[in-house]
Length: 555
Image 1 (cartoon, one colour):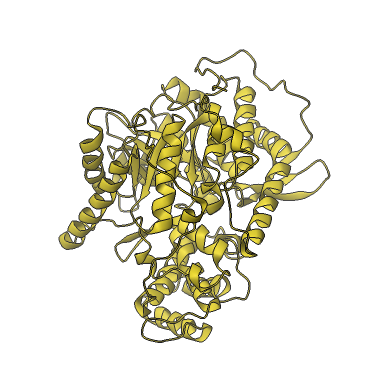
Image 2 (cartoon, rainbow, N blue to C red; image 1 turned 90 degrees about the vertical axis):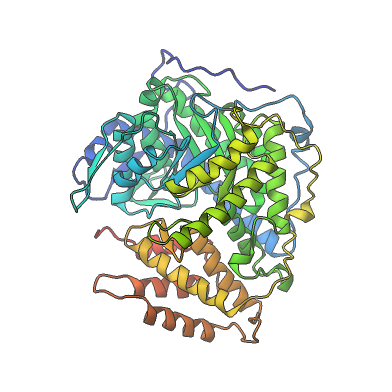
């Protein structure tokens, strides 16, 4: 069971030959601004229609599987390594496709949104790879979704240039730019400005995943190949091997549709959900012809742990978010297993993002950020990771120094197999940390979540707050911890009971402390926070309702 041989020479076919094409329809309902017609072309929309006709139904099936899995865990059935796929884990022969051109050395990757300024900064950063993020670091306004695609299109063609409102000109000046790996939205998210009508006549919002992926792939795959690289993707929020198989089928169909060789696409899967940690090897197997590696998505992983075990009693309650570090038992177990699993199958293991960021106006803050990031990356490199993430260009030399010290001139350390690592199912859910919840920790969660959501409503997906880079994942941790603390009758270390009334007092305090303006969205942000942190029910993602009810296109 070895991966299909890959190459980058276009094939002669221009349309798929695997069965009849279902009838479907895609309609754009969002406003068409300047140059949007370059992305929303008839041919691109026809491709989106094909993707939805073939894969939208399976997407809904996989989301239903997620709900069943959460219900089972919530009712006492802890996840286990799958018995029905043991043969995959036990077969020592198969390997994944591995790095495509331009992905051979991934020791430092920079992450960030795809607006023109951030795109240019990332391309000039000196990183080996740029995670072009249409997911957690992007607020999915219609403008951000389509203009992010325009930024990527222009960057890939060497045409990107940006002038700020203040008159500052930004352009790509680096001799070597990072290899682009684009992250589409997760399977659970929709795109409300594009409607899909299926064969049964039902009209639904399009899949955010298929829209982001499809537009990027359709417009850029051939040009990327001509540039000597390829269409590469980070896949977020995956929870099972079946979800990975769905993506693999999307990739195979897409390659045939454009007439490019099977295996041209490369995927890096984020292991950022608890169920996925139990199926890492199976996920690699299902995507093996397109697989480059796995990434330890630490923040969403913490959120997933809280979400799945939020109602399982006090022993599953975590302390302050700042105390849930990479060295606590369940985080240590999952990252050790990730490195071992990847290297066993010839895949890259990519470390996560430390949230600390420098402040060029505050040398003390910057020095502390450098120290903490250096320690984090030293641990990752020493554990066997092949690369890591940073969120700020100033952190690239800090991270690279730690990986250079371990890798030297080698592009990776896949040859380090980690046979000494043995991780059990119980270790993956060992959340015992032994630290209290502090009043400051509760307040920080309320403050960070409200301030982040307010920025998100204004179209900002990655926001510097109190010296940390916050995105949707860290906001999810903040609100889910508050929900769990309330429902598990927790108190702070000074004896204050964490109740809805107590949190309402903190909300009022936050709203009284933040600078207000006529155009801010703090009142909406506070209301969203109340819904996702104080309600009886636990919304699976705060962005689902906020996107549907609050995120408009008035920007």
